[in-house]
Image (cartoon, rainbow, N blue to C red):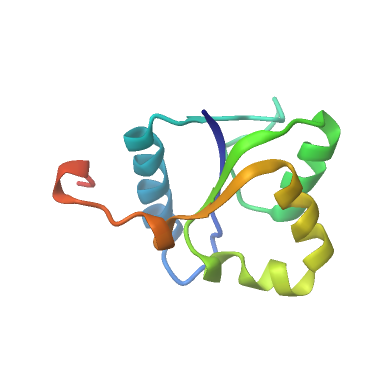
Length: 110
């Protein structure tokens, strides 16, 4: 399955820790990241507006959007509810990692 990862650099938890946990989740679940824009620097998104733009440009539906926590998306969701609904419409599932995944000692988080 393919997935897009969103990392909020201004979230309550540091972006390095978010990134580590999110990419570990991808590895454990056997998910592959999708890079919609060939000019994108990272394999994850840090801006919901850019994500929506790329989704519209490529008209691509992706299996999963993975975000560390609801708090990391809360400002965008409250400020731009219509855009959030548009973003969600491109995905089969939106996963807030903090709600569904508790890392274990076997996950090798270092």
